[in-house]
Length: 180
Image 1 (tube, rainbow, N blue to C red):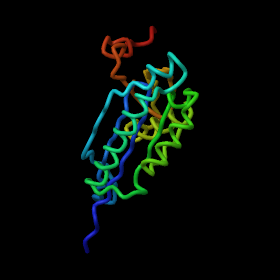
Image 2 (tube, rainbow, N blue to C red; image 1 turned 180 degrees about the horizontal axis):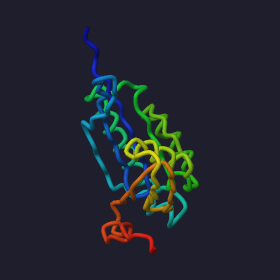
Image 3 (cartoon, helix red, strand yellow; image 1 turned 90 degrees about the horizontal axis):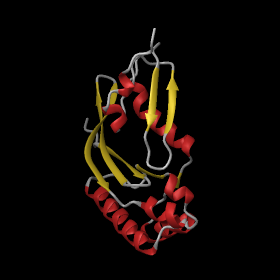
């Protein structure tokens, strides 16, 4: 019996960049795994406009819509079904006075639904991604070094420190042991 390869896509609209990952869903020995088949990051920098003026400029809107159109075409090329992708926007879109109008324009022009999520929902998505990597009965401190609003989450179900890709983590500060 042949089953078609299922592909999923996730688009993250952040303050500094828009990221898209397309993954294939693989099934092996009663487990499902995601295999990344495409990853794109574009430094749109919505936060430059929003945190300076409170709005997303016309120029940024035009680039934003062009880039999302390109991602829609890329998802088509990769055979991602129309209901197998999720687009989430975070701080810059949430803060922008004209954020709802930009979301409506994207829906109208491209037929793509952008979900503007709060910080708590953003943290939940991040934790869902990393929680399977954590060992039981251990402690973790996860620090999300975001452009708009750094946050931290303490989890009691894991055994090691999670290292951010930030300069702070590279400095070894997160590896320091607690004094006895």
